[in-house]
Structures are given as structure tokens and as C-alpha cells.
Length: 140
Image 1 (spheres, rainbow, N blue to C red):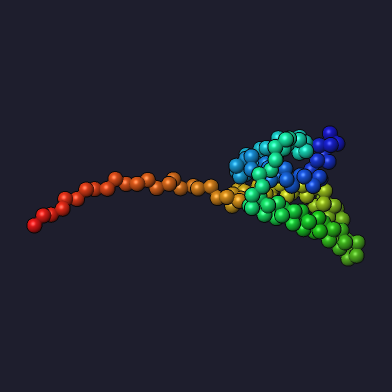
Image 2 (cartoon, rainbow, N blue to C red):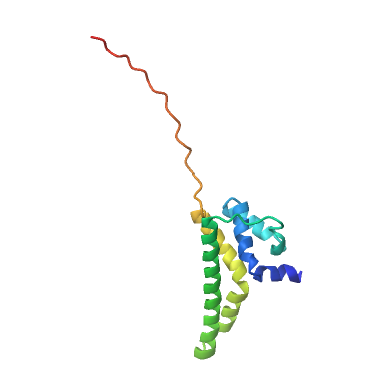
């Protein structure tokens, strides 16, 4: 139980989220189904490795940046509470810091829903060749 809770705070958690994105074929509904069905995120990948592509590397860095920004926002709220008497600052700041794994996972789902990261999935059927009409050549 404790290892399952700690698994969302490990550095490998971000790799696991990207692996879930890949295994769900970048579909938001399937991604959330896998996310909420997972008990321990340290066992999701097993012996399989994350498929490293240029897009995957960019997504990993983007998520890492988002995590740092979110933790920074939480610390900022705690600091504003301490130095400027911001009402509810420490509670909200602590909630952001503690809840960042779930918040980040759902921000990814929103991004997948609207933009289908990193590869757009075609929604229009490919064009098929139309049969050409044979014309008669006029002979003079």
C-alpha cells in the first residue's frame, strides 16, 4: 500500500505516464482508464522500455517542466501565506504540492483530448482514386 502511494512521487513516474500515453495510442479516454486502473505505478512498465523518439523526449521534458512549475507554484503560495498573510495559502500550496502527480496526469489527458499528442490521428478517410473516363480521340 505504501509503495503504491510512493510510486507516484518517484522520478520514473513521468516515464510511466508517457508509457501509458504510448500504450493507449494517445487516446484520452483509454489513457485515463489505464491511469485510474493502476494500483502501483512502479510496476506498469515491467520489463518493457519506453519507446524513445524525438516527440517522446520533448513530452518528457515538457512534463518535467510542468511538474517543477507546479511545485514552484505551491511553494510560492506557501511563501505568500508566510510573508504576506495570504488566507489559505499554505493549505492550497500544500494541496498543489501533494496532488501534483494526479494534476499532471489529468493535464496530460486534457492535452490528449484536445490535441492528441504528439502525433495527430487522421480523422478524414484517405482519398481513393476515382475511375477515369476514357475519351474518344477524334480523327480527321
